[in-house]
Length: 96
Image (tube, rainbow, N blue to C red; front, side):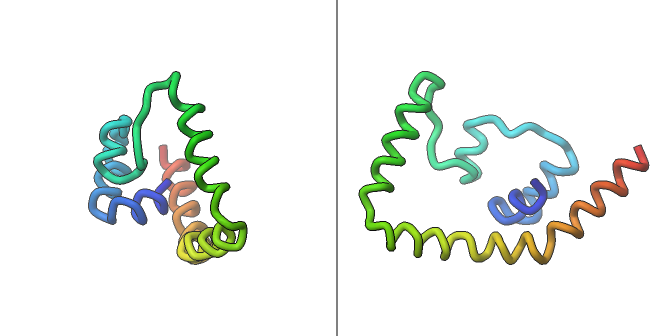
């Protein structure tokens, strides 16, 4: 969670949410750019299928290359920072 929030909303906002434990509701997630859209529960799966169908219309190579480009920074962050953050979480948990 700490890596995702920092990457998506910036360090200061992420720190605020992580320190406070404040919950992020759907409208706030939309405003912060954590989600692309918000829909009613009964529209959730139909909308997800619509999005998936649009994606699948693209050529396979395009989808694969796009995925590789999008995943690269996340893989780097996980490799470099995940262990550090998890170690701190475990340390903090022992203090409680």
